[in-house]
Amino acid sequence: MFGKFMNNYYYGKSGKGDYRKDDLPRTRWQLFWEMLRVRLAGLFRLNLVSAAAWIPAMYVLAQLVSGLFNLAGLVSLVQQDPAAVTPEQMEVYNNLTPLLNSLVLRGLLWLVPCVALTGPFQAGMAYVTRNWARDEHAFVWSDFKDALRDNWQQALGVALITGLVPLVVYVSYQFYGQMVGQSIFFIVPQMLTLMLGLMWALALVYLYPLMVTYRLSFHTLIKNSLLLAVGRLPHTAGARLTMLVPAIIVALVAWFMPPYMLYALMILAAYYLMLGNALARFVYASLSNAVFDRYINSRMEGVPVNRGLATPEEDEYDEEGPQG
Image (cartoon, rainbow, N blue to C red; front, side, top):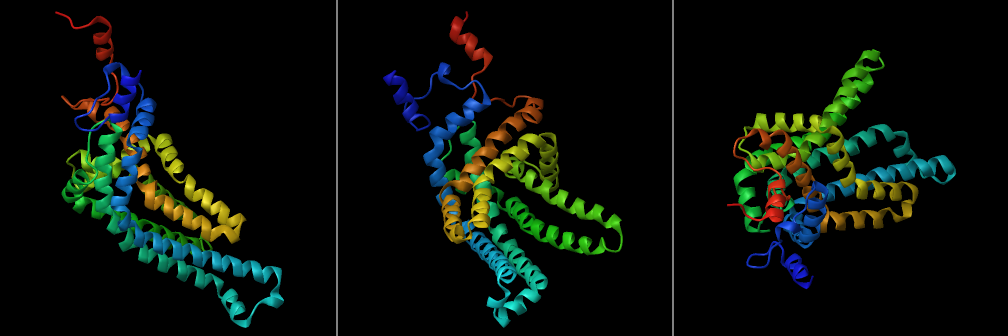
């Protein structure tokens, strides 16, 4: 028992004891939780390695959210006690719609280069977490750096599109929303715009893992990611929603308890700076490994599948011993 504990403690470290075959996980869920337990400290280190790339985007988002809640507070003040509102505040209230649009557009424009900056770092994290999620070794810094260097061009392109998508969706939604007053049929492209933005968000689950696993052209990379997102829609949407839980909780706190908004945002920022992004990449890597095995690797001759899982052949070998 003590020997197994020591094996588990040292699992994954070069030169130390490794798992026996009967210790290997037999399902994807077992593999996920076991690798998360083993690699949790590594995820903290990996997140810190890439944290600097996210600081500009987090700053822009914090400014945008703060501005939105300031406007919401002004609206609440005017509705509750108009006599307490200053002339300057009333002028802002009377021009609320253009000010709101200007605030959102400015924030989304600043996000484009900030998000683009994170792309190569996402590729490095995707490679390390892909290996960890399928029970393979990867060094936090050297493998991260190599994957960043090898995939930075495609990663930069993906991240640039990711930064542009919210801006395009917002502008298109506003434009078609105004056109709906002229014809109800404009609601169709308005909804299509939202669907395209949603599909890109789901495709991001597979974009970086595909990028670091296979040699694909940029067009094929995007096409295959979208197809995989559609093919495994419930699982992909579930993974994305699960990783949004901390942000949703903070949004609810800010909405129902505005005095605690600043503290909630600080906690959220600390979570993403310390663990959040690496944890999300690990979850997406675990899902991607399973999806790749089902739709890609199983159709490629000589490519192993179910890495990290105990196979029926290994179980039979352990029970019967070597034959011959």
